[in-house]
Image 1 (spheres, helix red, strand yellow):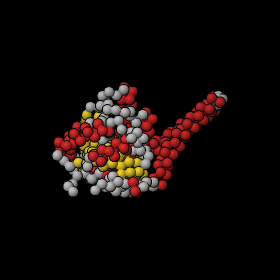
Image 2 (cartoon, one colour):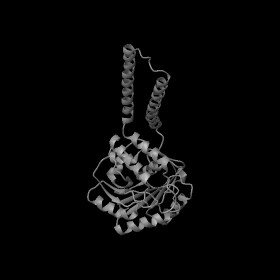
Image 3 (cartoon, rainbow, N blue to C red):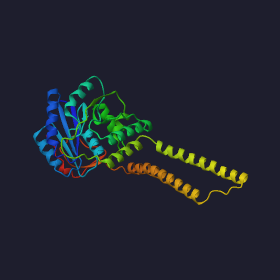
Image 4 (tube, rainbow, N blue to C red):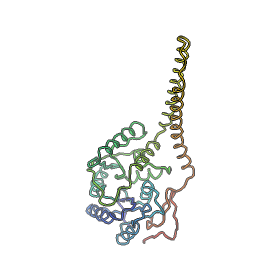
Length: 328
């Protein structure tokens, strides 16, 4: 079998309304390149018939392979499964909602041929609401200040990775994965280019405000321990402030005979210190919870059905071996 030059990994969750249009657009964009390619779809436990559509597409297109999870394990798990499925010398990661324009893939391939191991497509903020745009910029400024890796504003999962970059990502054993950080952490020669933000072709976004907030917190905690250090600094600052305040009260009482402050000051101090302690315990709890999750060594996902010939090695579990559909 000739070597596959390009693998396109596409995680899908409830994308039945758009998956056919996406597949047509992607195939149209890739065929003129002349490269041998494969498309690796990963159904992340969809409930709207996405798995059935992928099964039908795979039956009619020999370049298509798919894997379906037993339930929704999240986009990080789907990206991991897709990279494990991939066999190409280059791997493109993209979403199925057509917000990642397929016509940009040939440009990514061209930049890859110039020697870059990572080619990142960075979307602009055209069409975003003012509040969301401001919050996003503030988050990326926070990330650049606190995280141990560099993440550019607008750099998401739409990117090309060389085979050695993919192998480097797959060699990382953690189960709590934050792919944006991992892509930056592995290094290699990287180039990026901007593209105009576009709306979803159909369906609804799966990333509401709450999920985005949780994802942002995961990113901040995954690549640094500065929140713990911040807790130490806060505790020391409060201790010194309290010590200084106590000395001032004592000196004022001795020199001027002024009564020490009473109920209001005491309640304020208790509430303030209690809030700091609870916040600190929450930060510590997040790190302990991650250690607990990693120590259990559960697989990142469970495969319900697949026609992918590449094995889902460490970190994957097949629900029923007989449900795997291997095409010759």
